[in-house]
Amino acid sequence: MRFAVVCLLVATPVFADPPSITDATARGVAGGWTFAVTIAHPDAGWDHYADGWRVELDDGTILGTRVLAHPHVREQPFTRSLSGVEIPPGTTTVFLRAKCLVDGWNTETTALALP
Image (cartoon, rainbow, N blue to C red; front, side, top):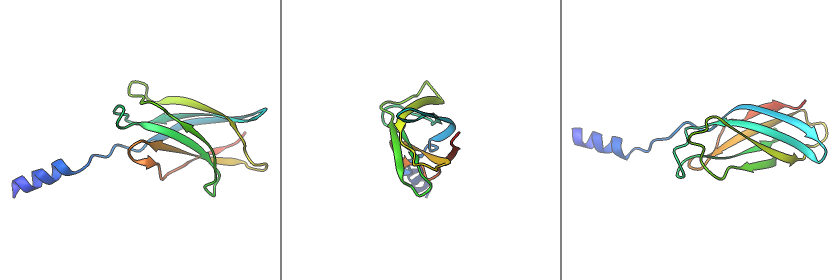
């Protein structure tokens, strides 16, 4: 019986914490908005890392996506920017969502009030 329990534990996948957005700023400039987003994630290398974030409206409409092309194992948390995001007139808040290569898009979003 003990062997079966050990086998089950060994076969159980280990899920890391989802990527979390720890800070974000937005500024309106000619040609759209620029976002700087700070993400924390226990990147483990090329097989498991935070690989993107996006800007959404409250209804889920995606306004812009920042692809992260490599792991940031030794740089945590890290900040990356995205420029040229068009925000519909009258929008006062957007929502940011981070993504992990293994676990996909985070179910939680971070609200960001536009200045």
